[in-house]
Length: 65
Image 1 (cartoon, helix red, strand yellow):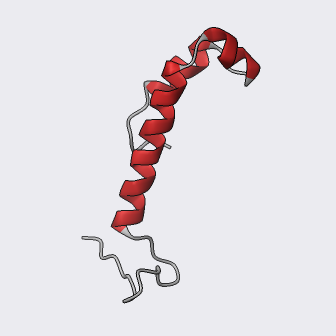
Image 2 (image 1 turned 120 degrees about the horizontal axis):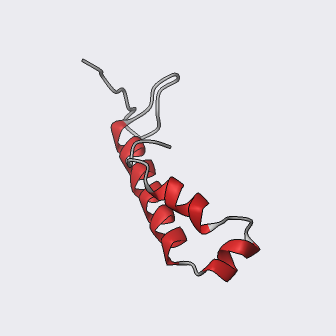
């Protein structure tokens, strides 16, 4: 069983990662993947991605970063 240590001010103690911070990261990644899906092919080309790249990224589970 994992234990997460957070100081009273919400800062992580050295060498530890908070569950809350991890969950926020997962949410952010899912939102970024959704934003990529919403882009049209022209915009994807502008940032150097293909539709296939986006589909491969969006097929990942939320915890796969």
